[in-house]
Each structure stands twice: as structure tokens, then as C-alpha cells.
Length: 221
Ligand SMILES: *Cc1c(COP(=O)(O)O)cnc(C)c1O
Image (cartoon, rainbow, N blue to C red; front, side):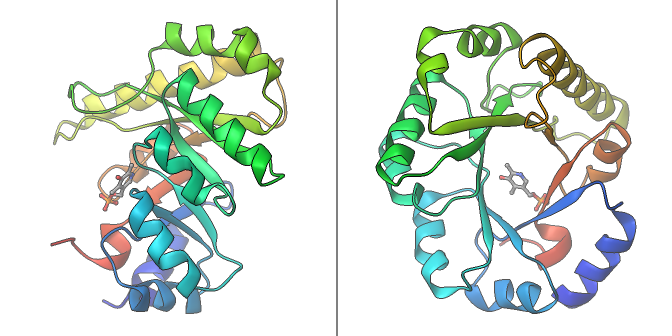
């Protein structure tokens, strides 16, 4: 199946309330253009270097999302154009994003990444760490970042009950933070969860942003 066919198939499986992030990591500009020509406008990359190489070669109306672990010293390379950073996992990183966004005269939208999987290797905050971050004086002074929701990755397992339980946990974190820490702010609205293998479960558990790569572009080598 072509990229356009894959996208069309996904679109009919995804309700209007859920936005699709096409994860184009490791894929060439040509494949991204195929998806663009089929109407896709939101793309996600997990590495800053790859993102900064591709971005200038592609149309200006693409919304670029950074979905992978972000090092503080690389924020400056994407601050001028990134639309949403899904992977904020420390107050220090948020401070750097705020500083670089200010230099560009922007407010950068961010999600807090939570560690919900069993694997040790996945990045992310605990609930307690997130609450401490949100109520810190430093965060309250930041004017150039906006926290729009949460992101998480489930354990890579065949056992769907584990995946569902982890997504449900993230949905619970989202709802609790929205009500107790963000005053039910309209801006706090995104629940980024679900990839090619588990996006259906994620949508059933309330996802608003699914990050899908291989089901659009084929397997990565
Ligand atoms: C690679 C990646 C995805 C997409 O994975 P697929 O299984 O190819 O859909 C989603 N989210 C993150 C954070 C990723 O790194």
C-alpha cells in the first residue's frame, strides 16, 4: 500500500476529535511529501538533527512536533519553528525551552511526558514530579511556554490489558492535573498516546493525538 492509501485507511479509523501526527523519523523527504500531498499537515520527529535537516526542505505550513527525548543544548535549533514539544520531562528542560522561545518572541506549546510503561528505558515524569514542576515558582514565572497536556508511551507488549491499563492511568493523570492543577483551563486539552500498534486502544481510552509512523510509512529499517 502507498503512503496515501495508508493515510486514507487511518483517517477512516480515526474520529474527528483525534488528531494524527505522522511520525516521519528515518523516512526521506520524498515520503513526507507523499503524505503532505495526501493532505497530512502534522509531522513528528524524534531527533533534533533530523528535524532541522528536513524542515527547510518541506512546505512552510507543516506543523512540526518533537516527540522524542530532548536535550537542553538542542532546544535552540528548533525553537523558532516547532509547534508542539511532546516530551518535556524536567523543569530544567522547560526553563530552556522558555528561554529559547523568548529569544524568538514565541510561546511554545509543550506536553509533559509521563513514565507509564514497565520498561526502564522510557523517559518521563512521575505524577509527583509533575505536580512539583507545575507549582514551582520557576514555572509560574515562565511566559514563553504553555503546557497543553500530557504524553506517554505504553509498554511494548502483546498483552493488550497492560497497554489499556497504562493508557487509562495516563488519562487519569490528565484529568486530575486538568481539574486540580490547571483550573480546568481550556488550553490543557491534549492527551498524546497511541502508536501504530496500539492507537485503537489509546483512542478508546481518550487519546486526542495519536503518533503513527510505521502504519503510514512502512517499517523502519
Ligand atoms: C517512533 C515513535 C512513534 C511511532 O511509532 P510507530 O510504531 O512507527 O507508529 C510514536 N511515538 C514516539 C515517541 C516514537 O518515537
